[in-house]
Length: 236
Ligand SMILES: CC(C)(COP(=O)(O)OP(=O)(O)OC[C@H]1O[C@@H](n2cnc3c(N)ncnc32)[C@H](O)[C@@H]1OP(=O)(O)O)[C@@H](O)C(=O)NCCC(=O)NCCS
Image (cartoon, rainbow, N blue to C red; front, side, top):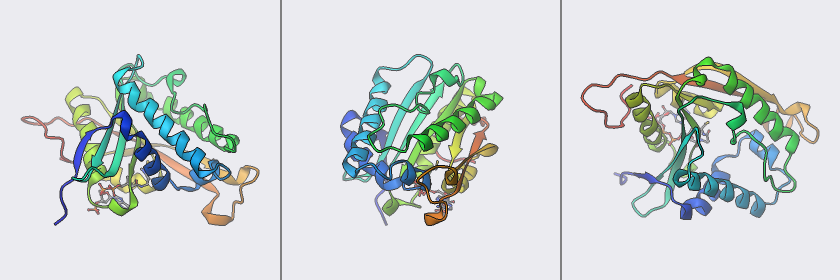
């Protein structure tokens, strides 16, 4: 019987390990395209820096949003999975969407592709009326391949959903195809779609490695009224 995983807040010292985890976990066609010409060390430095900046925002919050980075670890403190939840008390505003903004990219980044990805993400986020009110955004979630299907992601999602329920606000996620089943299981339902056609970009061969049209689904989960105090576990 495997030991249970432990959930705790991320701290600045976690950033290098989380940066390596991000590189291992996110190997989808769009990531591979964006970073195809970026040396590994530069990719790791980029991921580590942006995660460290995000974790620092927990203690020095930006007005208009509250950030939470959580990690799931083994009992000997190895990172299993991590999540970034953002609570937006005043709703989504394109001008505040720092996550979908191209900045500090390493040399070699395919800027045309990342700019297109962020453009369609901003349109999708701005389009959905529900996002104009207070809501939680599940911004980033990953489980290391060797720990998949052991419930780590579900527990990290449940943490945010419990808070969304306590506050009576919806939760959103922009899901890659990989996450769809998991988010549906956690009560999210599709409410929009976005796509990037990698075949339109120079230097990207639409035939190799399954590259071509990439799709994401915007998903919304309505708050659930809980009886007698929630414990953060999946009660869908
Ligand atoms: C998607 C991801 C976060 C799932 O993490 P996980 O820790 O394995 O998820 P859980 O163990 O909590 O899964 C719970 C349930 O979700 C569903 N699920 C999870 N991954 C699935 C998959 N790849 N295919 C089908 N169903 C899946 C299953 O119903 C699973 O329950 P089961 O194992 O009892 O069948 C992980 O595979 C990952 O990091 N993938 C790469 C990055 C990514 O796609 N991130 C999220 C998309 S935005």
